[in-house]
Image 1: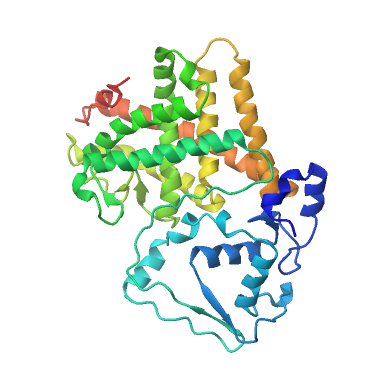
Image 2: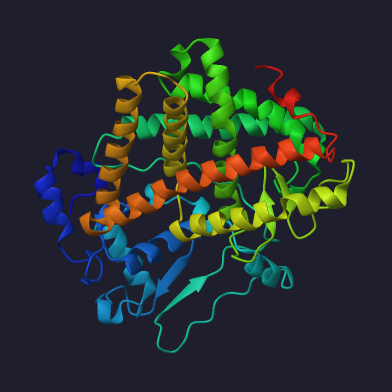
Length: 403
């Protein structure tokens, strides 16, 4: 069986034929490439959980259990062995998807400091041994680059840019809060003044990301870059913060909202967030509707399980949409960039989900752009009105002092 690392020499027709084959693990109907191999969703999910949670299975039948889709759960040890034997790649697992536990699971484990070994049912000849015996904490995403059969040069470059932005944001946080160095990376509830302080630095980091990784942004005149950045930054921040909220706070009724690195606010109690404002209660009431709408968008991120690469692609599409909307003449170069992102993203979806589901995924992800732009517009309007009604002390213009 060829793994994902050997698909690069296959034609489109050969890949389509491969996608028609049954799951290489259990023989059930496959649903595209997962971790380099054509599998069903159930086997892909099993493999991802096993790798991400570092589970260890023991077979009670000498490692020769048959793995068929009718009884694929019979022995997890043999099932995982089968996953490895057909070429599923551990390095392709995005560990951040499984390392961050929802609030409900965190709370239940905090009442039990030590996790007991799993007890297998009589029907299950394998057993999982616990390797985790510590208080659960929020874990930062682990950066993993997957291997795909196609060249995704533009997607990879934007992914590198987005990861660089996140890495620099951590460095910025340590510079501003040196006493936090070495502490557990738990998100903390903050005030608007704390958020604005980080926001000022993040504007500079976003500009650096665009110059270094989103060609040809760096070739624009400084005045043009300033104009484009002002229109790009808020919708980009919306998708960035929705992405991390979907990881740290995935519960659909969750009221906490992830901000910049290690920062969050609670929309059910906004008065502490606006504590430094002229009228905290009125400021809180003024923006409550925004967080209700943003929570709906976060829930879409949770349902889609968006990857870092998709966030990078969305950032690129938002940027070139903003540029197109703010230039007088058409730009073939910008249009080509946007089309190239569409092409690479759609081709990637065909590889990951199969031709039948690629279009649905493609449309669902791209629809996020419209909602992010609308939320960004509402944010700008809220800030403008808060100034008119003298609700805020925070001078948003200072955030753009570098530009």
